[in-house]
Length: 443
Image (tube, rainbow, N blue to C red; front, side, top):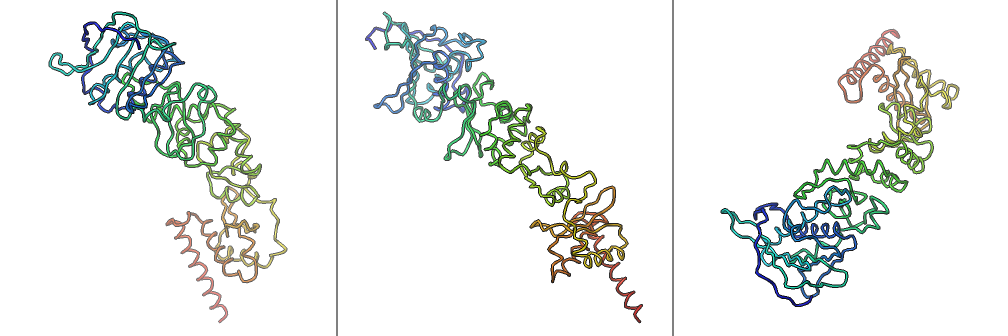
């Protein structure tokens, strides 16, 4: 920069005391200077010094008025939704942060003025003042540069890495895959990193619609989750849907739970990704576990996924739930029947129903690798289903035990409930009484 003479300095109070935004640090100061430069000139430049590890400089080809650098409320970006905030507001807050730290400073260089900042007493308070010095001649900074903001503050340079995204990345997509070594979702506002949401996240987000308040405080967690849910709902791609299905514990599922899905095209993309991953016979769970079991026996794969995603997939009409794929009467008439093959065993089990005085039917289902038995109760009555493998030689005791267990369900109650335990006791007493009567009858 050309050597020049500075005239007598003017001290102008900025109306901010030293204890304003006490939690602000080097990260927020450098972030605001970056955001200010980006608003003023999208082609701005960033400079660092090899000899000064605490210095970072932002240069623009546009120059603000001197008053804009000092007074809150003056704004060349007022009403422009593409801008991050009021022009210069963040710069003034950065000046506050830098001025209250030892060995830290912010210097603004214009063609006609140089502005630094310091605290002075005013009305008994320690108030930030702009130290405005007029130059005796216009200064040419560098070709294409008309304004510089130079921050000297320990740790400011460290904030640059991963703090901003370029316009090309932002224009390509409003979210992009995170790298493996990151543990939280980074949230950007128009390309400027403002905060991160702790916990497993699949993507970083450039949420252009976030409204930052006057002090640039980070939006509430609920606001961020709403914004991310909205972004996902509006911009679902096959790759995103695939990632959401594979990562069940990602933060994005909570965001979608808060926001929900609002577009049929998004629901269709999710449904297609679901079928591609799990097959065309895959269904989503029903409310009743019995319906899930019946659907499994009919050859469907019942897939458990987060509720928000499941709701969206069902909304597409492409994928059904376990309830929807079953016949209205909930029977399994399409399964192979075993009346001839296991006639004697079935007759024995049905005799237990007669003794227990329970109106129910008994059927056999092919081994599905999990359930031994199941009781399905509908308006038409109860059906006890017994796994085919319990009809193999040596399985008589297990077959009868399972039968009694499922019949107890026919009388009411879920596993572990008082009602179910009472039903088991009742059946045990009924069978014991019948056995004793048979002994007495034989003399």
